[in-house]
Image (cartoon, rainbow, N blue to C red; front, side, top):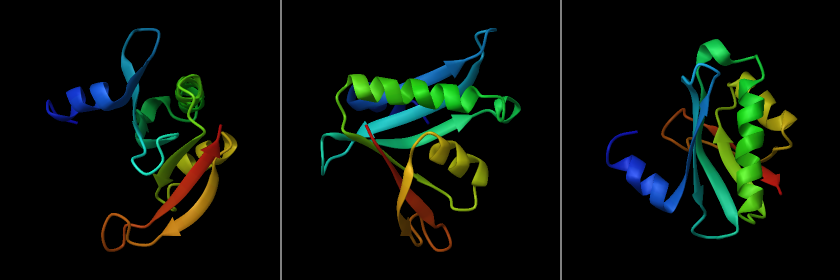
Length: 120
């Protein structure tokens, strides 16, 4: 993220941070409304700092994000994930996301993604 992107995300999307008890930022999430289907949210990025992974922080933060999107009356949430990122893939599957399709070379040659969806 840079100084140009943050205001756009705040105005036109959702930008959330996860903080620990010491008020350190341990995670960020960027979500946008789909242009093709305004009732669908798209999580553009979801990140938890490495030292906080596998401790429930990601699950708790993702549940918070899903709750925000439900409150905004979205009907579903989509995201993409690297098929080799088993940790993220398991987090999303355990949170109810399902793989909708495989997107070969989505972000360039050799950068494949799964498109995942959660019905709200």
